Image 1 (cartoon, rainbow, N blue to C red):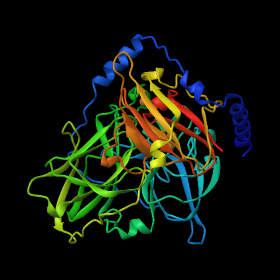
Image 2: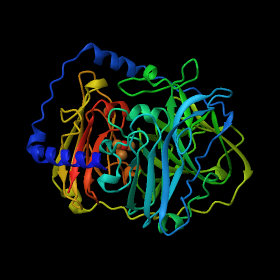
Image 3: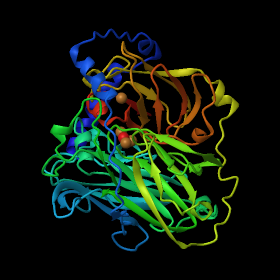
Length: 489
Ligand code: C2O
Ligand code: CU
Ligand code: CU
C-alpha cells in the first residue's frame, strides 16, 4: 500500500516533467554501432533451434477451471504464485513455479459484467506481479512492474469485466524478471464469456471440444531442469522441447466433431506457424480480443509471442485413416490427434459472429503516437530509449481514440520481428504498410507482429485510467528495456 503510494507519487512527478509531445518523439535519433555482441546475436537467431516431434505419449493436460472462493454474489478468486516440483519427464522432479499449483496456472472464467475480486498472493522468494494480459482494467489492477508484491505479500484487486468474449491470459511482469518467471512456469488462462459467445454454436465443452493450447518451448538441462541462466538468450530464449499446457510429448484425443482450439503462444520468443499435417484447412473464429465478424478459412496461422487465435477443426469431415497432427512450418509434430469415437453432429458456425468495425473517422485520424522498435539482444530500444520506470513516454485521454504508428526499423543486418503489445486495451489494426490487414487480423488485438521495415497503424482507445506498459513481447527484449509507459488520464 505504502509502496504503491510512493510509486504513484514518483510517477506523477516523472510525468509532469517528461510529458512527451509528438515533436519530441519524432526527433528521436538512433545511432547504433555494430559490435560483436550484435553479430553473435544475429548468428544465434539465424540458427533457430527446431522443435523435437511430439511422440504423443502423454494425453494433453487441461488446466483446471478455478473455483470461486465461495459461491456468493461477489465473485472472489485467490491466485497465488508458488514454487513446486513437477514430473514433466517420467520419474524426474523438475523445479517449477505456478499459480495455485506447481506449474502453470488454472483457467479463470469471467462473464461480461461480472465484478471480480482477485486476492493475489506472492509465495515465491522473489518479487512478482500479476498481469492480466488483454484485460481492460484500470492501471492499478493491471499488474505492471509498478505493482510488485514482495515475498509473502498479498493484494486484492477488483475490476468490472467490461469487454467482449475472448481468450486472455495472465503472467508475471516484475521489472527485469518477467522472462525468467514465465519460463519457469508462471502463466494462466482467462476465458471471458458473454451472451454472444454462448449463442454462436461454437464448441464450448471445456476440455472436451473447447481446448486451450498454451505453446511453450523450453530447454532442459542434463538433470532435466529448467536452467534459465544456461538457456537464456538476450534475443529471446528458445528451446527444442515443446510443452503444451505443460505436457511433454502431448497428444489430444478428440471425437469426430468440431473442436475449438484456443491457441496461445505463451513462449518467451518463438513464433509458430500452425498447420495440419494433412494440409486440411481449419476455421479461425477469434483473434486476441474477440470474435471475427466472419469465420475465416485458413491452411495455416502464425502467432508471435502472446498472440492468441481461436480455431475450429472439424474432425468429422477429415480423413482420419492417417495420423493427424498439428505441425509447425518446419513440419515438427506439435500435437498428434487421436480421433476415435464418433462425436456430435457438428452444427454450422454462425456466419455473423461479431460487429467489429473500423469507422471512416478512425481511418482518417492523423497519427499522434509514433513507436519505433529497434535493435537486438540487449541493445533493444523503443524510440531510442530503454525502459525507465520513472519516465512516462506518452499520455492519452481515457475514451479517446488515437492512431499509433508502429515502425520496426531494420538494423544493419536486417532486423527481426518484434511482437508489439499494449496493456489495458484491445485495439484495431488500420493498416500494414498502408494496406488492409488480412481477414485473420480484422478483429480486436492486443499484440501484433511487426516485421522489419514494416509500419503498422493501429487505433487505440483506453477505457480506464492509469499507467500502462507497451512493449515487445519477446520477453527478454522486454526485460532488456524494450518497453515504454503511457499514462491514461
Ligand atoms: Cu503479456 Cu506486458 O504483457
Ligand atoms: Cu499485457
Ligand atoms: Cu523485440
